[in-house]
Length: 120
Image 1: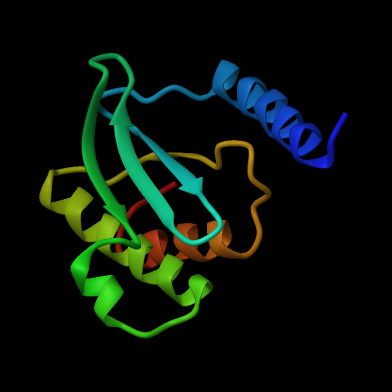
Image 2 (image 1 turned 180 degrees about the vertical axis):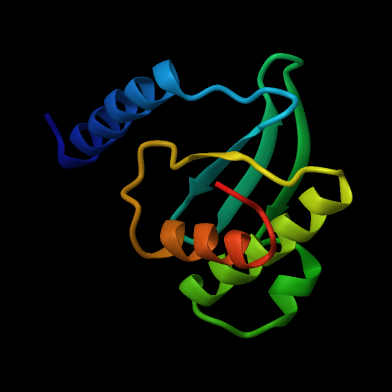
């Protein structure tokens, strides 16, 4: 098995294990993170309705304009997501790290979202 497929398989197993427990409701939607090599994306999802309530990514014009490393971009994405979520009337969420370790960019995004006013 190649290293890339081993990593993907590991993350898929962790993701399934997390999603058995975590589900987004209208009162407490799920904040999920996707991290690629260059970008980071975050969404607040109501799983019962199957709708995305708020989203942010490092590809948004305000964040692209700021010259920052990937961890700093993740912090900006977390703050922007918290801002958009509070505008949509969301105060508390359940965090879905999507199989990634709670470290680095994922941790920076989560902490920035907490500072922005989201509770999880």
